[in-house]
Picture 1 (cartoon, rainbow, N blue to C red):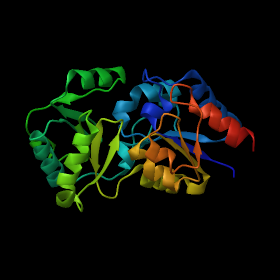
Picture 2: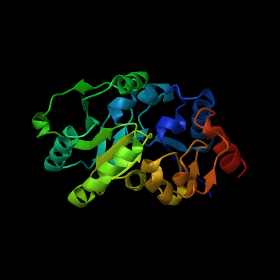
Picture 3: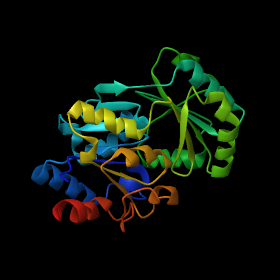
Picture 4: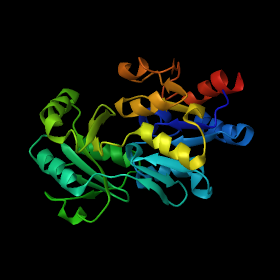
Length: 274
């Protein structure tokens, strides 16, 4: 199979534990583009504005035809200028319902629009992690009325106790089943998007834009919110630090972790060798 695109999750997959891109990952991105014509696309739960460091490190801020699958597939944008090619958000009533529910729970709440991130009840550990990743946010009070006329992409509940977040899902599932889909990420987030949104649909939509087949895509991931894109891609790869639920469904589990630069292993095994 001649692959034309590699879509990779960023946090805990393409980025190391310092939230940086390993040097060999950067080198392979350049090699794949120049020698094989294979495009690399970040596929992240974060949005365009929260990936500015990564866009600059990849050099995509200077290139016209590079893309971001952001916000778990809710948005497809051009990396250079943020031009929106596709967007599917949560309706305001559902977002507000989730926000008000979160106010009653022991969670930090994050509300992503296509342009900004708004945060309620952020703790010191979460603030530190976000600063390390270069993520900018605005703190808000107990209302999101000011977002009524904006494009809300997703709502996140943050708590490092995953069992607690799973209990929230059990409580909410019957109430929001037709209004929002949910997934988990980074062992600390419960994320709510439109029911039609996931990274797999993000890949499908980008493939339509670029005129390529999903079978020509390699997808790389580590956590629950990567599952759908791993299912649709022609070749699915999990980093060695991925959760077991992901390792059990992919075509290949890499020996490399997010700290090793997994892209080099994929290149050697599935591209150079063929």
